[in-house]
Image (cartoon, rainbow, N blue to C red; front, side):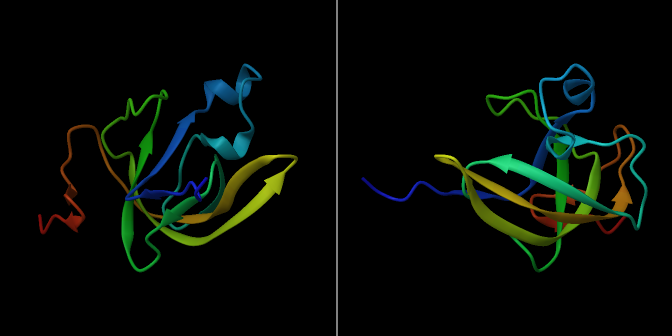
Length: 115
């Protein structure tokens, strides 16, 4: 048995309708409307590691690695692992740096676009 940990180059959260329908906690979802400069909480199942020294994409997930294009550029301010019963979770805070419009290219891999 080993330590199961996932390294994430982005933060992928659910659509807010998942919270409204009672399927997810609010911290597991992208709030609407997102605002640049505002800090939000997040919650992910599992022990996850995030890059803390720069901007990463905020994506919407439908599960099974079905991910959207970046919705925003964010900085993850903190990420903490904890147990809830036998389940491991990661919770934290992120700050929205820039909202990314539909079709706008802002990231090229982990690099920001110069446009």
